[in-house]
Length: 473
Image 1 (cartoon, one colour):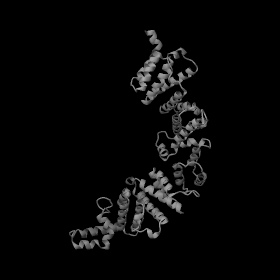
Image 2: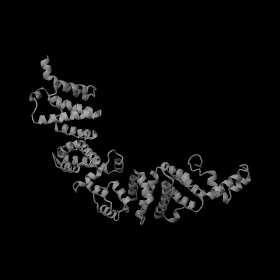
Image 3: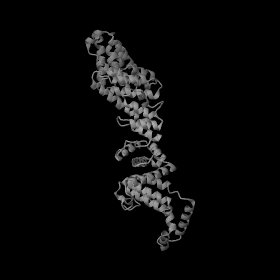
Image 4: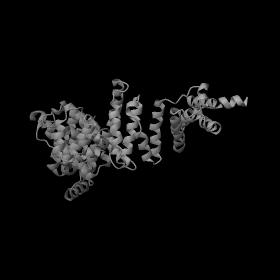
């Protein structure tokens, strides 16, 4: 009965597309195109079929097709609200995707598609037309904030004005204060990513980068904590920044703010705001997510004028040498970092323990990493005193105390034992003498006990700094 097929064909195709969506069937787009071919003017085609086809095209990254379906859907929604369609069609079934919720969802994804297709202005205009007070789930707020941050990062368009308006709308108690809190929490949680160390560093490598996403929040109302953090990250005067941080009485600051302050030369912990050693360790380990920056910070030097600052310097130095990519480090910087670590560790241990305790017999009571630090400090003292063989022994002992520092010790074994020409000459002379005797000759043992041999033993025998194989376990 072709007359009845013509009457119900649109909803049949709509139902077929819906089933294809539900069961992830590959025929979805084929059936959607058939619905357009035969029933272009049907409200079922223009809304439901278009919505499902948009979702499938987005999932398959067919962005041009997704935009075509999305724009068809939005135009149909305007006609639907204005009753510009054959209302008799509604007698044959319910429109499934005509709710404001689904419309907002599509608009957010459509804006992202427009941006990826190189039309940021269209993306901005779509998002600028959304009302934050009508959003009824966290996911939509998260999507909106993410795309707005991306638009701000790669364009010079005015993103701040609609974004600030959206923040005000999010906080309106519509339809309830509970929903406003859900939106607000989603907004702040998503936005907080813009202040993470790794996110900020990654942005610099993104195509089209113009400005950091966190700068978008500087224009928000004063009751938004992100506004204060954005202002701190943009501050270049260390005195002004230190004052802002000292007066801050809100939630914990992002680690990126602390890193920025330290690189400007702000002393930490801040006056009047002491930190527990455990808290310092946590902060230092968070800073270590940026190994090159924390190593540069330690190399440049941080204040050590009181016990708090010494403990902080110790936490930074430990985090730096543990996160350093020693195999990739250049010799000069790596040796400098190792020396700085040894010096800071010596200050730290002297500030925390009585001098009579810090002996090789007693340091077994220290945590492994601090035992390693003590041996490093003593090793450099020996090296500077002209005792390279003792330097090697102490590094070996340090490695036994903390095997996790093997990459650093291997680096030092390769680079820090560069001998002066006169020592190399002496080593060659000793090798020549040793070659004249069998290994079990008493003269060989006597020569090895001499002061001359001890000076160059590490050049002849090698440092043998590995934990397994060459050392007594």
